[in-house]
Image (cartoon, rainbow, N blue to C red):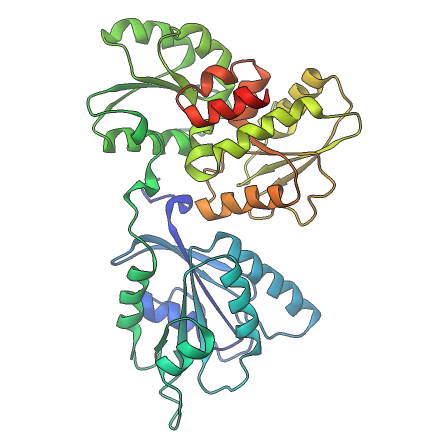
Length: 409
């Protein structure tokens, strides 16, 4: 609870052939034995995630991946898992084993990474074992089109240079954590409506609520937290009109009824649609709901796994709402966690959660994948506002998205 959530951490992934020294490099960079190292080929079998603080970058998630040159049937599955890591990678380190000469697998991977516009750094490892070489960082950079650093994880040579270079690869973006800060001013009141029910985690608020409160405080504004049944009384006690009311999507109707029309109102999920993804695309996806026909299949995707309640939002409520709203016989598939889907062609609509546990690149990849297959995608908050007939009001703080919706609805 006291750590920066994974979804807000910079994701740095390490790629290369089996035993190129990826795990050893992670240990050398962090100064800790956090990755399992062995001379046995294929020690790392699945991507391994480690959250930590790495100066001068700050909170990061390091991803250790399986080697790319396992030609067995199981190796092909591991390679696929490794390739999927690219969809959430903010920065890629390609580890070359200087004692080898065939870099076919690395070249193939470089092409994929360049297509995704991910910043890259080449690591020419094990130089303590390479006594004679005509290679230099400059010749390798010219050959592969990316910068190179020569290192030895055994002696530590080049490791500090790698850490310094990492800091230059990723732009320092103060806006990266903005959720609501650009919509408010210092000294503003923001009222957050946070229902506490059987689905709420014991002893804490859910992640979007925590992060929004932090962003409000970072913006020198004031967060007033209340439940939906106390909202009307809370507003009467303030003595000053709040600049914004933010609600859990499932309390939309109650909150809309109790919030005066001259006070802007939206939801945590809509804020995260803008923060992590593409609100304009997700709003356009809501317009596709009215085009659904009998027999259409819908994918409901979530970025994390959690215990399902009897009236779960993804598996129960949304299917019920869509069937009631459209009057159509619809079918639903569900995905959760790191998996998304490899076949979007069968779906007429993707409904995605707010993505609070995904980093921005991962969420935007899912939106991009849906768009590439011309499958509309909408998120929970936008869909719930639409189902309850208050999407127009919930989009008022976002003029561009509101214009798109007014054109498509």
